[in-house]
Length: 66
Image (tube, rainbow, N blue to C red; front, side):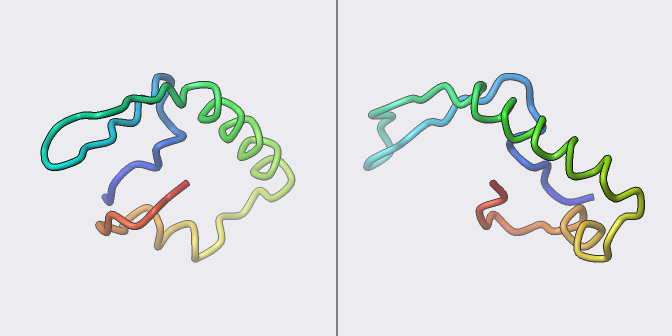
């Protein structure tokens, strides 16, 4: 399987690095929860899984998945 979408985690912390030094952290847990709730309402409306969703689950890229 590919990399998990960030919003699937209950606790989500973003670390921002500059020249190998962590200069900032941000707690994104609230935004992740909102995204999960939005996703749930969308999934309830559509019972079948679109091919795009299946492809995303096996995606190994680091592209933004938010």
